[in-house]
Amino acid sequence: MEIYSAKVLTMRIRAHHLLCIQGFQGRGYSKDFIDNMRTVIKKIKLEPEIEIIDSGDVICSSCPHNENGRCQKKPNSVQRVKNMDLQVLKKIGLNKGAKVKTKNIFSLVNKKFKYISDTKEICDDCEWKGECCWIKIKRF
Image 1 (cartoon, one colour):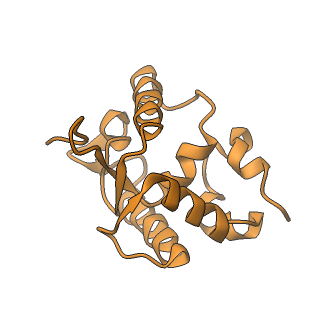
Image 2 (spheres, one colour):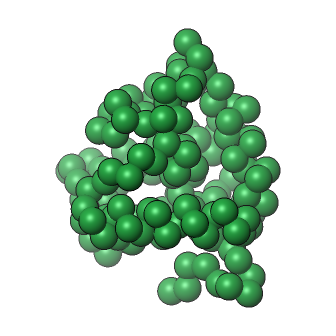
Image 3 (cartoon, one colour):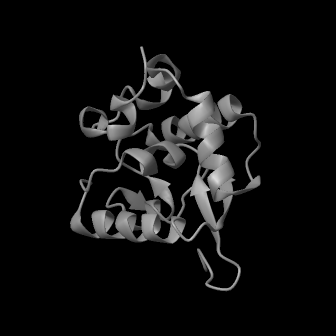
């Protein structure tokens, strides 16, 4: 499966990863995961079109908890992660499959997730929350 193309520059990104990308601090589940996240962020700086999805994406592809495109970190992870994606989609007012210019989607996410309370349902259980620079700049 082609995740991004140098010609078309479209990336398929899970909705909740639109938050994670902004707070990434170089830590993650494994070296492969960290290296992949850095590569994804470099590609995003090229301003590809983003297709917002609610399933495994280019970031999930290098996660050690990913088994056949599904999160297996905990018994209920598949549904929990999908719910996070759906909450983000609802908050930003888009449907899965929406294609948006990079600068527009990150601007929209930051407009809709202005306060720490806006992130509660999505980020509260995240093990990286304490190190997330994106969360740290949110207002109370």
